[in-house]
Each structure stands twice: as C-alpha cells, then as structure tokens.
Image 1 (tube, rainbow, N blue to C red):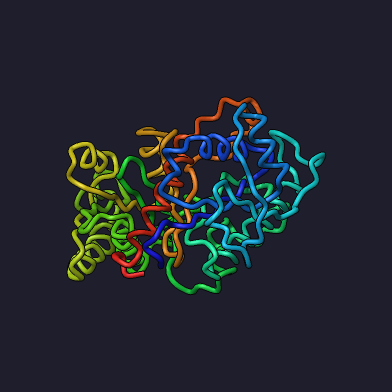
Image 2 (spheres, one colour):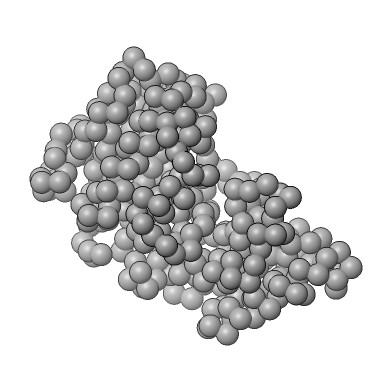
Length: 338
C-alpha cells in the first residue's frame, strides 16, 4: 500500500442519521484532515444536507474516481453515486430507502477499495434495521463486507479509544449462545488479530490481556471451568507465538490494567463485556475497526443518533478519530504483516 498521502474514501452511512453532519464537521476541520486525501462517495444532496445541518460549508468538485486523478484536486473530490431522492431522506427515522442508500454506497466504496482507487474506507454510522430493510443478508455490515470481498479469513469488530483497544471472541449473538461459540481457535484468532491490528496502527509490540468468562475467573473451577479447560490453554498457545499476552483475568477488574498503563488491549469473551467499559471510558471518542478485513475500514463506535439527527449538535470526535486512525493504518499497514 502506498506510503504517500493516504487516499481515504468516506461514505455518509444512513442519510437520515447524523452521518452527513459529522462529515461536514470533519471536513471543515482542515487540521484534522490535512495529512490525507479525501474522496466523498455518495449523493451530492446528502453532503449538502450535512452542511445545512451543521451550518458549515466546504467546496466539492465532481470526479470520476475510476478515471480521474482525483487526489490532485485542490478541493474535496466527490464521486457522485445517486442512491436516494432528496424527498425520500427522512431525518431520524428507519426507512428502506435509507438502507438501500447506505448499502449501495458501501458496496461502491468497497469496490473502489479493492481496486486501489482508495487506500482506506471510513463510513458514517449505519442503522442495522434500515440496512436489513435495504437488502442486508448478514448479521451485520462486517459479515456483508467479508462476503462482498470474498475474504475467507477470521474477522471481528475491534474498538479503540485514546490508543487503548478491545476485541471480542463472540459478538452479535444472544448471551445464551456465548459459551457454545467460544473455542480455542476463536480465542487464539482474536488474540492474533488484535496483535496484528495494533501493529497496523503503529504499536510495535502490543501488550494484551484476556478476560475470563465467569465471575472471579471461575474461582478455581467453583463458578465454571472454561478458564481452566479452554481460555488459559488458548492464551498460553498464543504466547508461544511470541505475542505479549496474559490471562484470563476477572472481567470486573481487567480494565484496571488499562487504567494503570499495563496493557494496550483487552480481548473479551462477549460483546457487552468490553463495550460497557469502553463506552463508559469515552463514548464520544471511540472508534470501531473492522478487524481481519484486508483493508483499513473504520467508523465511529456510536450509532446514527436519530434522536438528535438534523439538529446540528452531534459530537464529531469519534468520527474524526476514525478518520485519523484510517490514515495511520494505511501508513503502518506493512508493519502488521498485511
């Protein structure tokens, strides 16, 4: 991947959410985007809507990203993709039309990414209900992307906040199904993936801790034996691969290791085990990385915020962090072994 100025594509996510406003706020903060080239992908009227909502303006030039040298333009380049009529954008509501728009722009962004037109993709928040109404056939956008790119490797969502990272062995499944879904392969894959992704972000030797599943890490088998039978052996095998990892540690104290500066990342066993702690630490700054996908793809860790959409009050901090991280990942990609 090129080591010159990263070329980052941005798509607006759900047009009825806060995505268009977040994009306007990002692009009007020139210091935040100065180290990267930006390609906007989507409907012109949606980007203009974001400017109106935020009270901010930026200049756009229409390009054909497939054929033009779009990164050489002095203003923001936009590859227009007509996905939704202006009068069908309903602010703060779930609609099929918005889901179709978001899916269409996502697929185009992925196509541009795998063809080298852009180096990384940043998407504003999606609404999963709208995505499914718009044609999503998978549990979430991550699995759709894996299928679209015909990628067969291990994937999972990673989250990061102020340089601290979390991963999870299981994700968008019912809590009652978690134990059956945890396996040695999934634990080791999760450890290896977060180690590789942190190297992509510029951390040469990440320090990783792994959370237990049961209270008090099973209390020597009194509260469950998954730590003894499964998690601890998996951690030991990962450590034998020269990864700086240890655990399992009780999930109600493991995040204190981060507060003490002892770890760069924590691998949790299920979704909320890590998400609750991370969002408490900084809901308005967190970033989601689509881990395992062979290109940098990031987004803000929050959702479409339909309750405040269109009001001009959305905090763009997390989206700005997602954009910044995408650029860093492009520049460090080779150091994470691809």
